[in-house]
Image (cartoon, rainbow, N blue to C red; front, side):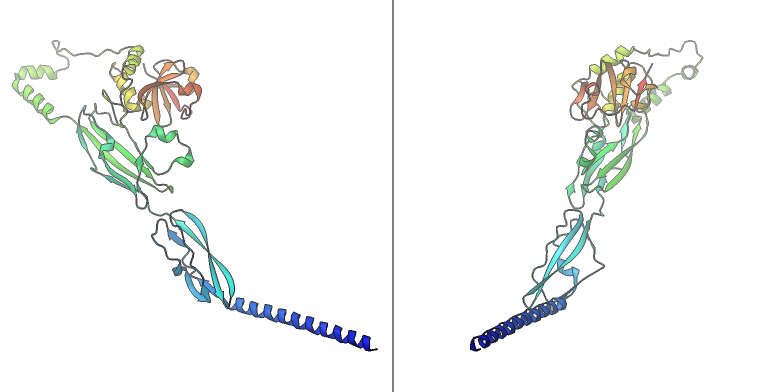
Length: 357
């Protein structure tokens, strides 16, 4: 009997101990939950966006109310757009609780384009680089934005087309007229800004004065004769057209000359300027943009003949035959290229092939 009683006593003691431990664990868990429930962190619900590039952003301003102690305020990188999850750790009586706040970094500031003049005026036949009228192109946060030509831009994939500016528009300095030039700037986050200026090509004042003086010094009868289109003694110089091979030879003679945006020759060219120069020098009447001169013969290489104008997206060149063209590109100046034949990157789909006769 004595041994049984001892066993019962031991069992009872063990049960009491287990109950005590269980009770303690339950109570301890209850207290922990009670403490955790008392930890509170409220965020400012109206502050969900932060401007890209904000300097030294203090995440403390995101907190509206806290019950407990925030161990450390998380850092926020404002130099990368998109949604960011910030984790705040709050402690109280050795208990920790995490709270998450989502902030979106947004870039609402567009690039800035500064022009030297709104309407530059140049003399007829003068050399003019449209880039010379651009004082600066920059992003308010990232600073200077670099120029890239249309040809270089078209060789880039869509993902890489960022943080650049380019210029479009055609100037024929041999023709008195007003020409519109567009400057398009795109920052690294895709914001864009466009600025437009007008370039006016004017007759030289000296030329006009000299012509007036010469007319004033002539007898009235001579002036009347010169103004009379039916006068039999009037000599009218007639410029005859050269052959298409003459056009090609003129273009070939420009190989190695540098690329300049708006360049119309003879010392420098852009892609459109080279085409215009080669044809105009041989007596052909051209549109202000070579890409729109002549008539369309199709848009596949098999219909092209030497001397045809190859028009692709934002680029124009003269076909030489055998898949080769002569063109002016920013990376190499005037050159012969066969990229259309072999599908070199940048050999875009033909938009049009035009023939001038």
